[in-house]
Length: 316
Image (tube, rainbow, N blue to C red; front, side):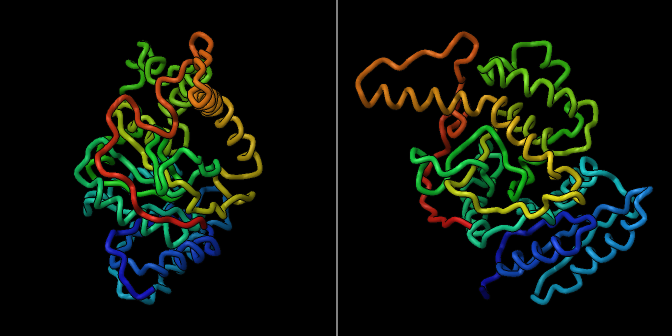
């Protein structure tokens, strides 16, 4: 592909040169004209980190297309939470919009096509806060041909605008106040989901070393929409013992999230409603406290952004 991708790309790296090289190869396929590289530093007590971090940073020297490269490299380890957040703050201080790729995320070329088109299409719609490339479930036959809106932002390959990222608050300063109200119950409308996300937001407010829970909170606090594609466009290649979070137990954590975040119950209730509607019967009601406020794949209680999705995508 010789056409230069117009949106800036932010690449987040740490200490895995092999994965960094694969991620950079995927970025090379679309030849962005501007690349921000955010690198975390070696961890204390991990003597191999110094060399591994240096090798990962050295991969960036192999860029062989016309590209303005800007680097932000931490001399010591900041952790996932602070390095990602401060790095994105730095990049979005300089650009209005960007695609975000971590070193363990391998995007299909159509992911960049999706992001480029939708960054422009929804640039001035404050209801849309992010564009995701990853989805853990399969295609939903009731989704539109290309993408749908969700309350859940993606963190494995995504894009956003400065106007949305400025709402991110890594400390969740509004959470203690909202926790004492019925905000989460009203928003989710699902008892299991409320219990799950209350625990997650409690951990995030206490400073757990991850950045993405604050990003979810920002979407919900500002009633923002996250776009997700009909099919998965980003593969995570980072599972393993050298990963920060996606080790073997990540499968158990993912299953926990799917089962207890309310996604499964909402999907079952939606399916029951569709079957009932098709047969002309009354839809079965959910048990008290479990009625979904909004379907996962559609919008929070607002009208969907104008314009029908028409971008054709293919699976990775």
